[in-house]
Image (cartoon, rainbow, N blue to C red):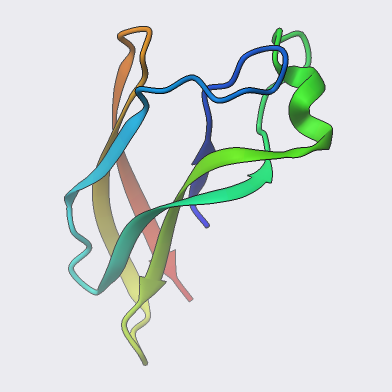
Length: 96
């Protein structure tokens, strides 16, 4: 698991409108994004941090290297939130 994020209210309800997608696939493995139920990743002080102790809907970014591969790899993904925030993320992976 490379990243996990959510957009929930302080009462732990999901806010609709989050989207995420791989924008550049890894050359020596597979990047994917899935929906799951897991503990929310909010930092202390965030109004939704009280939800961190319970499973809520989250987005997970995953990477799996090709069998037998070791070395550098890279992929990119985009996550967009209903408040208009959009993040384009490039991930450098060092497969051991």
